[in-house]
Image (cartoon, rainbow, N blue to C red; front, side, top):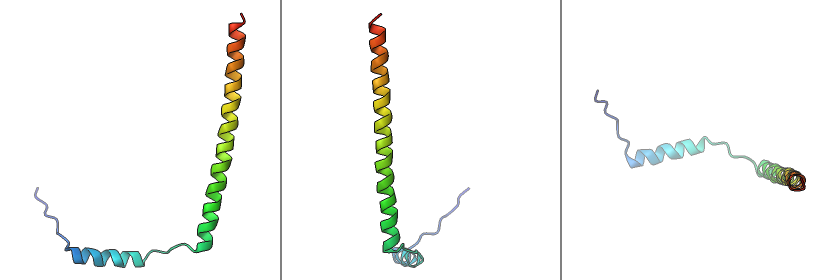
Length: 71
């Protein structure tokens, strides 16, 4: 099977790209700030959660090792 693809000229490609970019709905500045704030807040919360979880596991494992080495 020999399927030939139609080649697009560079000028036509640029025109099509410009037409497509005009269809994009860009977010408002306020929406961007709100979304960025939510992302920053969630990164901080998840960081704290994983820090706390890591500390709990670390302390637990150290206690288990101390109990095991005391036998």
